[in-house]
Figure 1 (cartoon, rainbow, N blue to C red):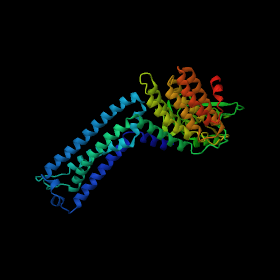
Figure 2: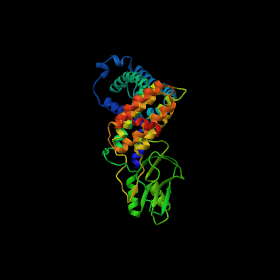
Figure 3: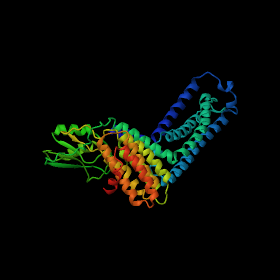
Figure 4: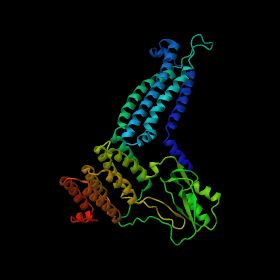
Length: 443
């Protein structure tokens, strides 16, 4: 688990890939110099134009390339972060997180600083005519530097185009939704049976002796090593119940697990063993927690619906992508296979995830007929892939909440008619009779 946590930290860091590319540039530079030292080909004679002016002019050219690359990289990324900071105020602060973890941004930064490092190494190997060892111009190395410099212009142009696209609302929302969809496939690969019941695991009530083990640090739980906890439970003949799941914030006073019917006091060795099964970091991880991906989409919608923004178009965009995420989630088995004798896990239920996705958006959509009707369309989309009665009951509950909210906040009969028309379609998709509308508004 420690290796997985370290890989997650490296994946979201801005420095790791550029540093690898700098290391690659150093290796490439010394490799090219070695080839130039061993080569008998006379590049300067066969291709005189790139080497016109002699070693001094080539030194100046390489120095200019190195200086321009480091200047361009610094200015470009400073302006980019400034633009993203402004956009984050309009959409969500998660834009900066996406920028930090995006592979394209790291590759572009690595290209510029790698080329800067490459030119620094090559320029020091050039010897002029008055050098005691004789003149030397590494022709292959210099030619490659010139080619990479020309390529750097194309990289810069592409990067400007890429950043212009990445700060648009549609790009931000779609990237978060794509991450969430991948997380669903990773965490919940099994499909839910049509007649399956979603039973959230709970500690047996007939157990009396319970000991809590607290966290050793504060932060968000990113990973839990279930295999380690199961091994501990079997070796100590106890039942481990996870009290803080992935995505929960814990403090040194927060219980991580409870040990049920553990006959001995939980000493420091036991506490350390339990804490080693939890990876606690300062941020949440979308690729280990679907609720965080949904939370990011909701944040964008809430920003859009705020009175100071009043951006209904962006809110509708979020609901469209949120419907895709929830339509995939509704088909999946969320609760893991139970291990009642060793470990009781803590996983979000479908009802909890639906509440996190829709409750705040519905409350912020007060009097907004476009958003309220779009919420009903979302419920239609999510209801189509499943016939599971428990999941459909949750969707019907949210249909009722939207209907009641619309009835209480819409001011004109025309607005209510628009919502009720869409509501009838939603009820039909949930196999509910048309006269169920009156019952929804009463309950």
